[in-house]
Every structure is written in structure tokens, then in C-alpha cells.
Length: 253
Image (cartoon, rainbow, N blue to C red; front, side, top):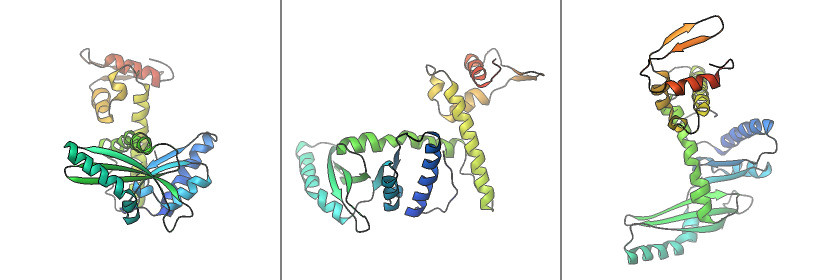
């Protein structure tokens, strides 16, 4: 999890490249042979980021904004889909197309996967640019849309740990607040990962974990060698709390 305080505008290609260099450098410092795939929305679909990934053996799949050239390349398939949807009176129809496209500022053509969707409200076309091989349907629906789970973690960081509270006047103070929120994120994630996978709380959101395991009444006795937490007999998650404390504490329960 990397959290950077920046201006509220679309990042430039050099900024995206700098973040990727830092994050991927840290990952490869621990796992130099690991295969890395970078997924991001159209804000990250910058030529500087693509070229850097290709030079360093990193795969990528980025959202890509449409333009007149791409629209012309998908027009025939879009027209066929619209006619088919109207003939079948379907609520929604999808088709996919694989394109080879090179913008003026690119040093080569790259693979573009297009998702074409026709509904009664009109036509919607989305594009992704990628270094991966595969069908357009697989690249878009499975690989690209698979980033949704990762975005949930970002939402938890912002909404459930209140990392958007950057109200200090000094940017350095706000960046430090983000660091503290990120530390809280890792604590919550570590606690969740320590819960047995068969239990519902193992996939719970941070807000649920806080209500069920942290914001509870208990009697705490601090001794020389250990800290004892006495929960109410009516606490519904006593067994989970005991298991979690045992897994996180080196000395055991």
C-alpha cells in the first residue's frame, strides 16, 4: 500500500512512472524473479508508464480513453451489435474486439482490447491497452476488471480508516497523517489475515472488525509477563478474540 499526498488532478506520465519505479523496485528488492502485472484505470495509461514497464519486464493493463481513431476502428462491430440488440429486443448485448493501435507519441503499436456494449440507452465502448496476450473478452472481463477487489482495499483505507481527513495547513503534516492511517491499515489487515479462513470475519471489512473485535467492553489486567483481557461471558466473538490474540502474540494466549 503506497499513499502519496498530491494535487487533485490527473497525474502526468512522468509522475506515474516515478511511482511505478519506486513500488516495483521495492517489490523486486525482496522477490527479484517475481512476475509483476500492473493494473490501473485510464489515469495510469500513459506512454511513459508503458515504455518503462516494457523496458523492465513488467506486464501492464491500463484503461485507455477513446478517440476518433479508435471509434472508427470499432464502428462496424458496434453497428452490428446495435442492430442485433434491437432485433432481439435484448436489454443488453456485449461484444469484444482486439485492435492494434499506435498513437502519434508512441514508439510502436500496442494491443487494445475493446468492450462494446449496446443497451436501450445507447452504445458504450471501453478500451484497455495491454502488453498481455489473450482474447479481448478475457483481457477486459477477467484481467482488467479483476482490479475491483484491490480497489476495495483502497476504499477501506479512505472510508473506513478515515484517511481523507487531511485538514492540516502544512502538507507535511497531512502526509504524516496518511502514514499513520496506512499503519492502521496494516494493523487491521494483519489482524484479519490472522483469523481462521473458515470464519466469516476472515473476509469482513475493517468497519465490521472494529465493531466486533475492537470497540468492545473488557477488563484489562496488565501483569509483569503478559496482559490479560477478560471479555464478558455474553461476548459473541470470545473464541475468535482468543484465537486472534494467540496468533498475534509471540508468547501465546
